Amino acid sequence: LKSIWSKAFAFQVCVAGPVASAFKPMLAFRSLALAAAAAVIAAWLQGCGGDCSEQGCVYDENKVTNASQPLDDRKKVIDDYIQCTETKDCCAPVDIADKIAEHAKLINHATKEVEDMVVCKR
Image (cartoon, rainbow, N blue to C red; front, side):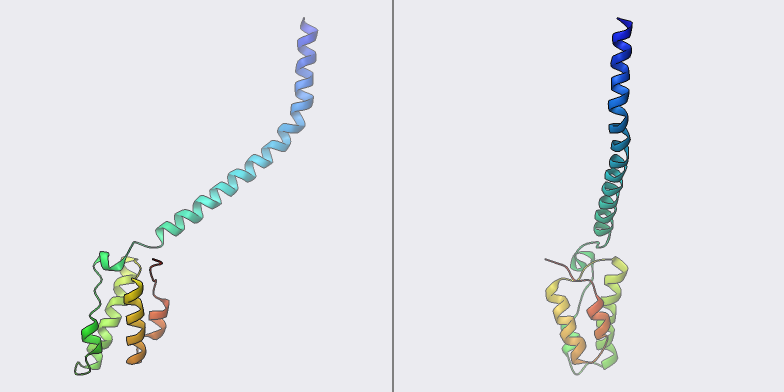
């Protein structure tokens, strides 16, 4: 009986040995791929703190489009909104981002910063 067990153990070592050595790198690669995927998802989720309107950022369209307002005040509205989106790490709603882009071109101010602003995808 002892020789049967020793032969079975020897067979297991001979067969499982190569399989086990091939399995460990595959397991390590799978773990690495899973960790990389989790890191990408975590980075994506951290990238945006939500809709800027819900975070308290306000864009005063009337002040920017009012030609009787001083130009510096009109520029400040755009600058303040951009600063708010950066500080709160949020995304500008599409309709507001489009208005800001239009107004920035109209008064020739901060067009690059407006283009770089994070816009919500919905």
